[in-house]
Length: 125
Image 1 (tube, rainbow, N blue to C red):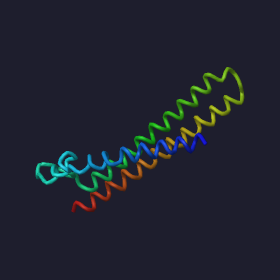
Image 2: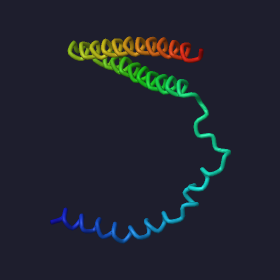
Image 3: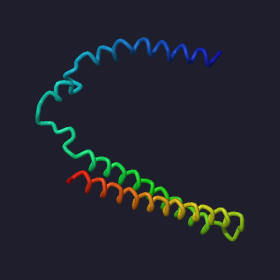
């Protein structure tokens, strides 16, 4: 019964607040709707190839940070294992997985760098 009463209170408060939230959205100028009609806003001045290359670099950089954190976590587990062989083995597995991930990411970076540079060289001519 308590859950039903709680749900009723939530629904009633949503019904009370819904008209005020709907009326707040009627003024389009306050949300910047007319700001896009001005010509001084540059919404994408980069070339598509540069944008794709930038996105790939950001994703691979994030994955590189993630694998570095996995390696550090494995090292922390190893340092705090206090000689427990199960924890040491688990830490070794984490470090190994992090190194394999890092090798995969570096390989993906090299391949994507080569493909994008060749694509750029072929399309510029």
